Every structure is written in C-alpha cells, then in structure tokens.
Length: 588
Image (cartoon, rainbow, N blue to C red; front, side, top):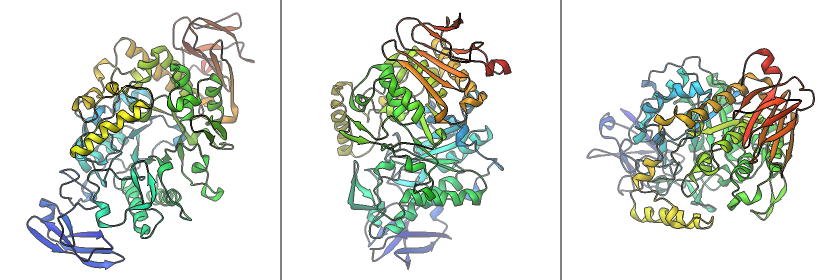
C-alpha cells in the first residue's frame, strides 16, 4: 500500500484516480486528506479528483514522468544507492561557482550526460556546480523559472534518479552542488496547486501575477510547502545549497518572513545532517540585511548575488548604457564595487529615479556572489550574446581578472571559461498556443524598450533557439578558445594559492584609476592587478613596497616590469607581486 495525502481545505470530497479506479481520501484534519491506496499506483500513477471534477496532479508530486499535465508517481527516496558518505562541500568562502543549464550543457541535455563533463570543471578549479532550476515545468525545454511541480525533477532531464546520479557524481569528483529554486511565483502552464488550496493570494502582485501566499489566511501550509521543498532538495537529493530566485519578488509581511524561517530551518537541517548547507539569495534591492544574522535583525542567509560589479564592468567593457546600465559606466564604479560590494548603497539611481541600496559595512566579501556573466545578464539580452561577443576576448580577460581578484565569491556561466561562441538565449516549449504567442510578443515588447528591434529577438518557442544555446564543446581547446581557457585556469589557481585573495576583506582592497587614460589598479596585500582598457600601451609605476615584484599573470605577451614601472600593451591585464613568486607556487 502507498499513503497519499493532499491539502485541500475547501473541498467537500477528494479521490485518488488510479487507472480506472477511484479511491476516496478521508479528512485528516487542518484541511488535509489522506488514504492508503493499492500498490498499482506505482504502475499507473495517480491524479486527484476534487469534488468530483477531472483529476489533477499532486501539488507535492515527487515525480512527473509524463510532464506537468500527466499523472503523479510515488517515489522511494531510500532506493537510490549513494556513494558520498562523509561528503562535506567546500565553504562558500573558498568557492568558485559554475552555473549551468542542464539542457544546454551537453548534446544530450540530461543529468547523466552532465556527469560525463565534470572532469573539465575539476581541471578548471571549480568547487561548486550551480544548476538552473530543475523542478518540473511545461514542455521539454525551458529555463526552469516557470516551474509548477516543485518537488519533481524535470522528466526531460532524467527525473529523480538522474538528478541523484549527477549530485552523487559531483560529490565523488569533489564538487558541491547548488540548486536554483523559485519560491516567488508558479509558472503559467500546469500550475494545478491553486485549484486544491490557496497557494496564491490576490493581496500581493508580482511581475508574473498573483503572489505566493506567505502571509495571508491559510498561509501556514503554504509556508510549510516551501520549507518542506527546500528540505527535500538538501536531504533527499544531497544538494549542498540553494540559490533563491528573485527574493525581492517575495511578498511577505509576517513577523517572521519566509526567508528568515527558511534560514532557521536549513540551519537546523545542517546540524541534523552533519554537513554545511548554504542559502544564497538573488535580490535587486542592494540590501545587505539578507545576509546579516537573525540576531542582528537580518534574514540570516549565507550569501547574496551582488550585481553592481557586473553592471559596472559590463558598462565599462562594452560601452553599453541602455536600461539599468545607464547608472554605470565609469572605472570609479568598478573600483567602488570592488571595495564595497555595492555601488548603489544609498545613492540616487537615475534608472530607478530614487535612492537605492544601503551599505554593506562590516560584512565579509564572502557574503557576495559576483560574476562577469550569468544566465540573466546573457540570456535576457535580445540575441543572448556573451561578453566576448560584445566586447572582444581582450576585454573579457580584463573583466574576468577583476572578478577573480575581487574579495567576493566568483561565479561563471558555463562556456564562459573558453569564450564559447554559442549564445545563451531564452527558450520555452509550452503547449498552450495562446500562452506561446504571449511569450513571444512579451519578449519583443520588453526588448523594444531597450532599443532592440523585434526582428532581432529569437522566437523562444522555436526549437532552433534552444539548439543554438547548446555548448560547442569541440571548440574548447582550439586557438583563442584554448587561450581563454588557460587564462581562467591561471586566474583560479592564483586566487586559490594566494592568501591575500582568499580573505574576503573588503576593507583591505586598495584601488586607483584614471578615467581618461582608462586604467584601473586593484591592490590586495602584496598583489596588484593592473588593467589597461585603452587602445594604446600603458606604463604605470610599481605600487609602494613592491620594488622587487615580478609579473605573475599576464593576459598578453609584452606585459613587463622595467625600470620601476609596469608596461602593458593595449587592452590587457597583469597581476604582479612578490609573495607568490617567492613561494614558487605560480608563474606567468
């Protein structure tokens, strides 16, 4: 027998539909219904009929082998044989995170196929794989941010067994796993949960419609739904951390907001499991309270995506000033982001037309995740073009050097490390034709505001859009791609071998720059990064106390130290110093 349960507080009757038979559920208190059903459910799956209506999938379904509209299937989490006893993920303070989309990472686009490529990440120096959302969404291809069956790993990627296989393989390779989860809305197709219970509320609105009901009537079970979901990924799938999508879009006026409750529950789970677990928020408010302790009035999360360094670098490297990039564009912005994590920490934002952010005073840089590229900043461009395609390889190398030299946790987007020629575009495969048209038209309207003509916006529903976004692994070792890959390897090696680059101390970062001459200098301890963004060479005196320094890394031939000065060719970067060279642990 299998035990089935459903929260449906306003229903008069509930039945489980298994094959041709209907099995009534009995009230179990507090709006819950429950029943023991025959083992045939393992073969046929089940749907829930509410008040005699047509069946819907289980909102807590652990497995949807036929997609969001098909029957749910029970799952025995104890059946998988794990090989990661004693595993403990590296701490966030030592992390180099690699964000990937399962469907585009490999030709096959499955969890198991991704496991075959992990050696490349280990060789690069990555410590954590971050998976874009894998909870069941409509269709076979998509970014995953429109998930509707939040407890079920996507069927097209390989379902529950496939995800466990990948996590197990990551741990055996020494890689932690962070999973992107979405708790701010449900997708527009296949969202059956609100038919059963008040998972959504009209009291708050998001960009996607009604908000998740975290603070209204009957919200206790909705909060439990999210807390149980987080625990499931961390406990049953052995995931090491969660990246919480768009937390600024979570509307919750509770005395104990859901993010704080989530941090407390995961902290207890980490103690129960005996291994570290992390929560990282995406949030566009520049609000460091997310990562301050609960005792200090914060949410108690472990990290937050800090976009200001990306925005500042992008604007300087590409010259783009559309949309939110209008708030950036100077080397002073890049320098401040490296020292303070946030450029806008209480300043007026022309893009927002108001004051924005608050200072991150007293926090470690290890609380902030930064990047030169991520799925949003590439995929939410009209053509999904990467930084190298916009600014050129030389500028990408400079940007990467700043990211890895910063006191923050670096994240890179799959393919970035070799300057992949493939774009990363927005793709969907919804079945509802009306919704499909709305997606296409909505994307074109959105990009029109950025100045991109409609004909430049790929059709998300076209399978070719998805196919173009597949990584071209064959080009990885070739010519300029191999040169870019070597640069990323050496940057990561330097970061991991130099104590000055690992301390997360923002107060110890020293910067200098010249807007007209277009050079930027960042010093951390006895190491200095000098970047020349100009179209001509640069000679810059050595930093104080480094008269016997040597070049440790250089993005181009011709970087040298002569007569007490550093000489750089146009559009290049170099790291120089004494300590690493003297220990013999790195070379140019």
